[in-house]
Image 1 (cartoon, rainbow, N blue to C red):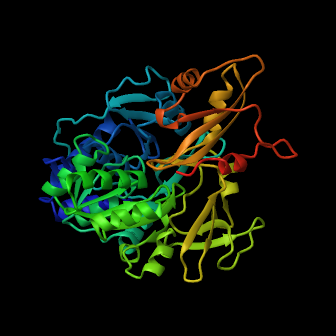
Image 2: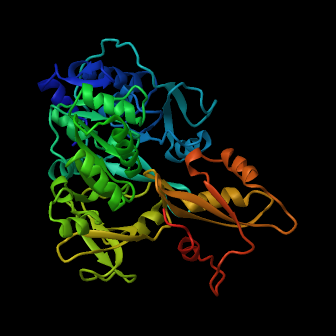
Image 3: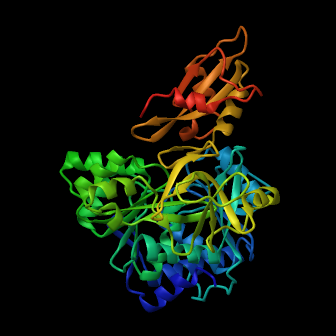
Length: 499
């Protein structure tokens, strides 16, 4: 079933309800949103000749048009390729070429220059042309809907192929395990719509809730507080670092969370002290989720009642977990040979679920390595307690999570190794109180070469997105290695100061 049917049905049955707002300004009710989507879909087909199965990219900050464009793609059976707006244009262009995108919508157009591979269009609002309202094209569950680009240890992004069935099952798990979507809700898009925040739109579209884009088009604590006070019933996804910053700003303003119904946090570790401070100020408004792009937002969840459990001993223990398996998810912990481990034993977390991706776009080898005998091998290490709670103990892929965003060391290392003064480099994550982790580069300079931290930072600035750049450079004579010559990143992490 085409996931766009949910919006169509809501627009037909609840046309007058608020659909999309920018701050306090109403942009669409569900009737006008349906009209806008049909007009966009006609434009894709008639002007840009986009056909079923073609890939259409969106490289832009959050905006009302994002929801229009995603659904316009699905209306005609095209595949959406949302691209992280924080990426450097050269990084985004690599994704567009790999995806084979025929068209990319950007904030202003002209970001990439002429290309034989794709055309560009501005994402800005357009005047409706009175396009006929039609139903979305009929599609099967297994047909591709969303290419979600997530990187691996090689540093090159991989496109997780998410089907219409994957998205529907994710949304059904949301209402069963995360939050009960309501027509009264105002879903706030303070985190990027290209990732978790956008993936969570479906249940609220089905319920007829409002979708609220903040005027800043991003995360601003004072703006969120003001919207909570004036609009109320806010529901939003946030990385743990966002929650921490919101709590700090709320204390300064004397705000107690009134007007916020639910904050769903994930994408990185929430330190127990930070969570308890948030609960003390805001009360039971928090839900934790654990997922990854390959099974979007859907592995485990820790519900608001479990987080708010008044039993101090039990709640401390459970708040350190990522919750229990979501409704349509089966989880196994396996050893290096793929054998299931008993409760309490640490191994790799594996998932079987109708939410698991179809595979990686144009990468059969990576797909075969990641999905084996129907099980998704997440690359995360953890264990399951006797009462079914899942605890993460490490990440086998060396991923650094800063502010809820994944940063892949190999990519940063390759950029630094291209500098003529750098002989060896090892990039690791170091605990940091605000962002969860920060990127630290351990550098060995080539003989008789010199390079300052400022020089290397400028070098990185020209080659990658700002959030990926190291926040600290440590110059060393040599890197710790084992007998095979492999750099021991565990030793570098062990010597890092606590956050």
